Image (cartoon, rainbow, N blue to C red):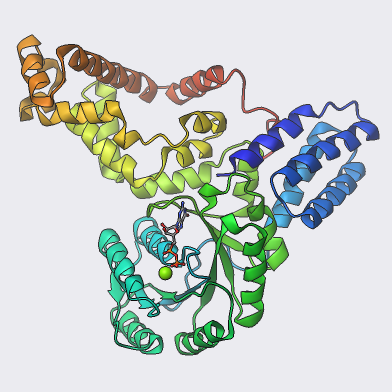
Length: 454
Ligand SMILES: Nc1nc2c(ncn2[C@@H]2O[C@H](COP(=O)(O)OP(=O)(O)O)[C@@H](O)[C@H]2O)c(=O)[nH]1
Ligand SMILES: [Mg+2]
């Protein structure tokens, strides 16, 4: 997320050479303006941001730290609109959310992603109502999604949307659900019929929140249609879907400010875990290359079962990490979503994330080889990698359809990884890892002075 933006910020910040004069400040502002416009941030937003940064820096005294502080403050202001941040639960459940948007914008997918997030991260009981009855395929799509993520669905192809919503409300109350998400029908463009149907559904649902799902790839249209929905039915949050396909990312910077409604979530892929909360001050940290540890911790603690994590850490420390633990770890990793988005959240690892790109760890050649090998092992061998003598290795190679050299290579990698993990899990291990990472990148996080985000 935000690769291009983060890059252009870094290069703008990197180019600033302050000699504490106003000429230098002007240069820095020009750099910044170029990078923001290049990222497709709306020109009015850019103008306002620059004017405020200039004013702040002049008041505080020209200098690099003051410049970066003013920029961080102004970015946070631009990204913040009046209203809720993240997902907010009402005191008396269920929290009812109406999902709206144009056809193909990503409503149904986002409904599934939100349900997944609430269920997995917040351990909530979620119900989904299929109120898109325009297309029969829409109900089927939702059925597949809810089965996949293990969330209950209210659907009835022969009923009116209002009927389905009524039933869902009753089931949510009776069944003590925490959240009810209502997926609605979209149109190719905004028309009166759509708005009237939505208004009817809204009247019955009496939702606590109305989310507008906008396709990030439509750029400025995403902002425009969101504004229309706000005016016609009133929305309380925007979700930008398909952000992974929008390499520039500037829409996300402008939308809250331009629509006057907070941007709440960002869709970053087609899979269920690919949804991220948009919390302005965290995003600013990431934009300025400082990573976003809060989001990372939230994501990992939810996905990784704490008890098994502790057990594994203990084993790693004792050097007892075996193949079963490895398979366990892989399963846990899968729940985290894409490797790239995780790496981007670790301070100083933004560059690394880019190198990894869209690498599909799970389907990589190495991973397939090691999985094939593990499945050819006996129970004892899985528990104790040291048992693997040459005769056993030959047997495993045949079973996995590999040659013995490949088996040896994978085993060596596995042993090295276990050794490395043991070392890192010891005292000062995290520090070692950070040093290693910054060496690999040829420098630190770059640009951001220490202490800026205290
Ligand atoms: N790459 C990517 N594709 C997405 C994202 N969200 C939705 N999609 C895809 O967009 C298409 C339309 O989504 P859908 O949820 O059916 O849209 P709806 O008509 O608004 O309900 C589907 O193919 C989804 O897989 C996203 O965040 N990233
Ligand atoms: Mg849909």
